[in-house]
Length: 281
Image (tube, rainbow, N blue to C red):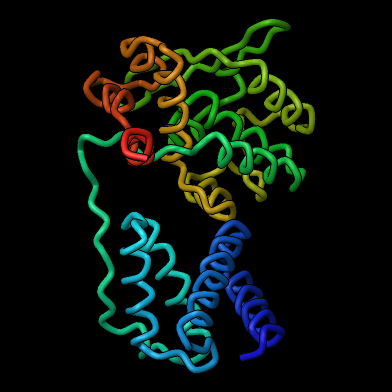
């Protein structure tokens, strides 16, 4: 397939998955994976227009030989799988051997890297929805659970010139806690509240003027390729990495068991990979 035709078919595929509800971030990742796959095909006498099951399996083996992690390989395969269905060739992904992603208990929960966090904050701000901007910033900068966020009322928020806080009532285990608000969290929350001309008690309202639901928040975040848990994990990991003691992080996060919090002091999979590279490169 000519380079121009390759670009065209990949672009058509991206339009297709966006129409199906995939996020811009997912489309960007799929594009990168397919371009990488296409370059490999060119170097190995393959053709994106005449894909075979052997092509896919050999590409997976190539990624493994290059030392790619199981999660990375699974992400590449997900893009190829969606593309195969798009071009009407689902048979080429049948029974492909892909390394399993194993969740290790001695690895810290997956959180956003600084660049990923900044990308998310930038993209949600560009969409210019004050409510969504406030929600994302509140989740990242307080670590509250989505269920706790949607239950917040206006009366649970205190914002002053130099400080502020939210009170999480009936958190997990029916335990309430107070979480201080950083300057950025206060800024975006204030901007959102300035757009409200109603007297409803709920802090966050849906597009139908009802208390926003957990599912609605999850759907909003999925448009950016993000799971809510990743934002909570990011908050906890950031505090621990800055040297904040475990008991304080546990109180802020609402962890009843401090051993849950200790997970954030453990290395991530990326930390382990960097340690090996540093030691043996």
